[in-house]
Image (cartoon, rainbow, N blue to C red; front, side, top):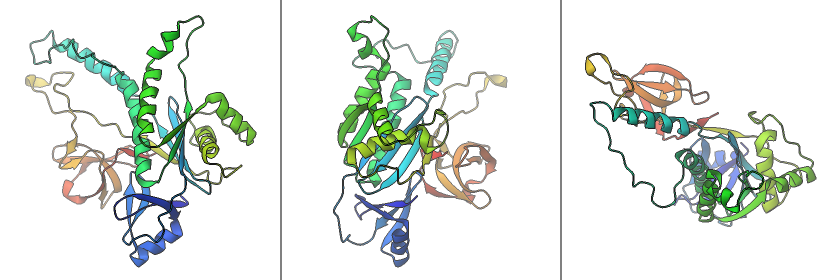
Length: 334
């Protein structure tokens, strides 16, 4: 990463600086380092000598499985982010619905059916999770970069030939993106580009896009987000920074009132939750043996630790007193 985000003493974002200047600030005591969801930042301990800010734009290339974000000014490309989308919500909601219906026929506690919970505009849980995740990424970047504009590739719902005009308005995709655009306008100016316009800009600059949509390369998705940001703010004909930061959302097992299958003796063991031996699940901790990991579940007075890079569980028997809390996480590196 070539540039380091900078915030003042009130946590207001300033223009990013080079990593070498940030190191000098830290060594001299002028700044304090900290991490913001996987991005290394510095906080100034003195009054900044210059608070002028340039126009900084975020180019967003949405997708069904991968999404790209590029933070850029006219002079520099500060960060390229590649994220995976949360695609487990639909299956989890269906499983919850099936188990809830099954409990209503058994002699056990259950929530009575509600038939008045569809008042007002409704957004499907899977659709809401996807667009809320996009908004959370933008809010995260907005806290450490002085962002002024957002440029998004506008995606449209496909309608069959001869369909009525109101068909597209009832698509979950259309409902989700309209909500997202409304929230995004509260963070800064919003520009929209159609898919064919993005392609024209990419072809004009002589850039090529890879056909492998699941590859972790700049040419797969971030090339489009860079083209959108470059169109909004200008400055380059060739990308000056092709390094990417891949981000994967963490999935937490929520607390369940009942397990799916009964245990012996009719007892049901605990399942899910948001706390593990005093730690919030997903917390970044440092262990003497396993290094930096994030907290998973707990069992029999021990907690499980997971790798930041792959998400795999590295141990299931870590002691809480041997883990030092570092930060709260909702994503991990890919």
